[in-house]
Length: 238
Image 1: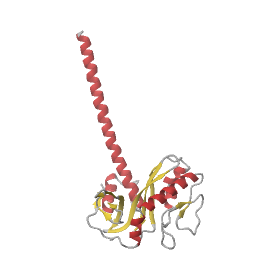
Image 2: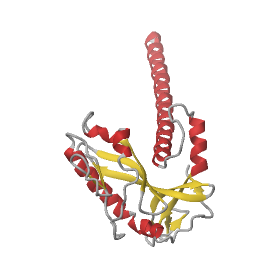
Image 3: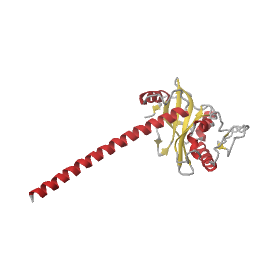
């Protein structure tokens, strides 16, 4: 009987130790995943903002330093103004990232969240301080087919967007469109599409139109030069 009790006690101790080890490993893995996600987000925002550095060689500490030096988070209110806090008086403001050079705003970056063929497409789009010209575009999460729709994460596709316009010739809002093939040269708001990925291009076009329209009020204020190029009380993105 004594041997049985000892065996049960030993088994319980082993089970408890195993449980604690698994919990500790899971907590450590979750923390590491959060750090990696943060670093990946920082890399993508820096890339969209066209910050000059080599992501393959830069250490996490160097990326963090670049990020804090150039990128700041603010929130856009329904009135088109920029605020240091995400909410006030029940209003939910839109997240917005500013790229600063010597304290002056050179571009603003909005998050992209679009439908894809197999899942959500997420990324960032940077627009120059003129409120009209795309400075950069990145995709950091998608479930599109490798070699087809998955090409949205390739450099050649993302560089398509640089220099394109989100306004027409008369200054009106004009959503970015992804062509089925080669973009027409006389359209400032159309980029080359991906062969064999028509649906991915269509859904991403629709998503970009929605995202850009959501931020159009703030873009309009940039175009009208109503946003101060130097802002006080900017909050570094954590």
